[in-house]
Amino acid sequence: MSEREISKIVSEAREAEYQPLLGSEYIFPAALAAELRVSTRTLDRLYTQRIGPPRVVIAGRILYRRQAVLDWLATREGNRPARKRGHKPLSAAQV
Image (cartoon, rainbow, N blue to C red; front, side, top):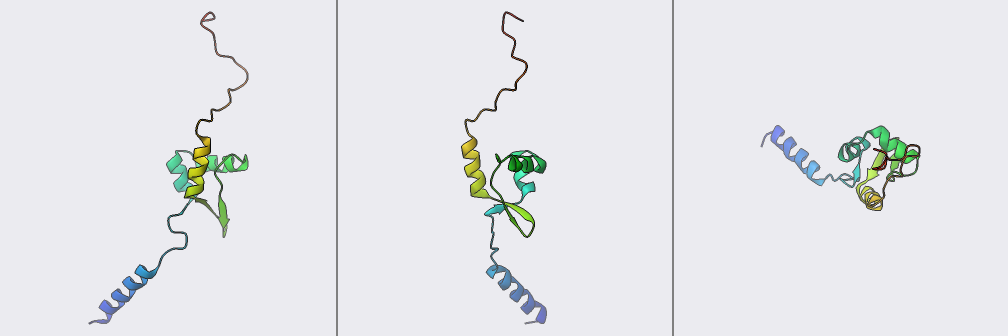
């Protein structure tokens, strides 16, 4: 067996043994924003207003736990945004 083949086998074995600590349990803001079809700035704003999904910061990187995001979405079901103050909708008599 050549040295190159041995190196390839060792490399493949190391990759097979390697399992990332975070796995797919965590998601980066850009990926979450894409899934929710919002901007990362919107995620930041929701977090600042304390109405967004919970997040964790590790080594300066923001991560969202997938299950926490799903739980957050479940709490948002059925919530309707408050009607903006100011103009009331026109009634049929006013049209």
